[in-house]
Image (cartoon, rainbow, N blue to C red):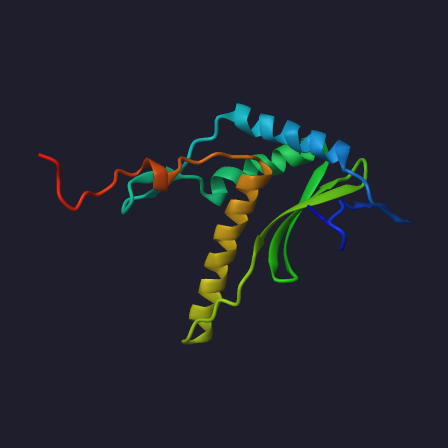
Length: 155
């Protein structure tokens, strides 16, 4: 969410900034979540090492764009104040909220190409997780779903 220094939601318009709960935007976000869920999008990514399927950005973004256009929403991915943010704007009611994850200085020793590739990889993962938050897309909990390994099998 977009918050002021006192932790209040902020609504924007061309002339003033008002502190209000973005009710219209929250309603549209819930509509977007339902529309996405109703599309029945399948996971195309697969982790062979841990044996689970996951959503890739290509599974989410095309339908998210279509839904946002239909509901007159816009999204913007940014990095500000040590946070990666997915800002969601209600273009009809001039409200905004954001979904965010803490950023970190990911240093990589090596050439500039490796550094840029690592930064791109980080942004791709974070964008995916922010869209999962925005559209409330659920994934299987890999940690809880995995079977514990026993040191000494019970016989």
